[in-house]
Length: 233
Image (cartoon, rainbow, N blue to C red; front, side, top):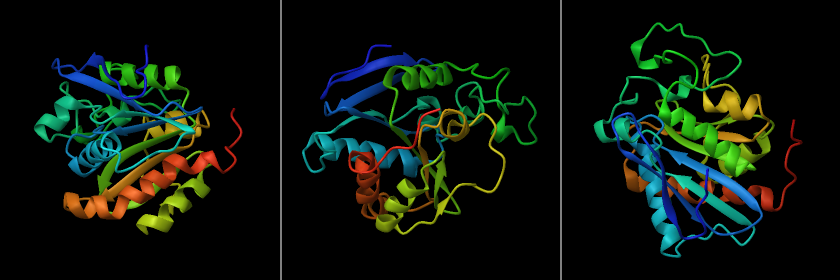
């Protein structure tokens, strides 16, 4: 996969229903960071935060710093986002579709349908390609949940704690239920890439989300510029 240069936006692929998936880059530092939104299309708190964060970067209101190259995909599941639906255009929960060691085709609720096979969806294929191409030092995925938290996967509780100092949400290494096929399992636990799933309070107004989370997200993105990174597997 080709990656954009700083200030560029490229189309890296299309969804099941043919919607474009865009990737933007900000900065040209040695520390690559991946920021994603819209994996679950009914969690608009997440993808709207990412889009506003992009706008602030583009207008110079925020700066990730000279040491960072920030790659941003605001809507990883554009079909779901367009329809405010959790799943993609084939009714697959993309956060249960990645090829983790614990992936299973079994499900009890159609909201969590993991797909016909691990990695079966084009959006999942693009996610895997992004991780391989970027080799990120950390990944941040924006979601929302009734029980707001900073869910950390991998050896990155310190990173989550640094973000918590700004947004006051509790850092938790376990969201409270199994998540086979999830990004946190695939990159965080299985590949030792620090992975933060920010669970914003479901139903929170966009301005309140921005006020609570913008600086914490920026602090997370910059964290490994002056703190040691966990050892890679």
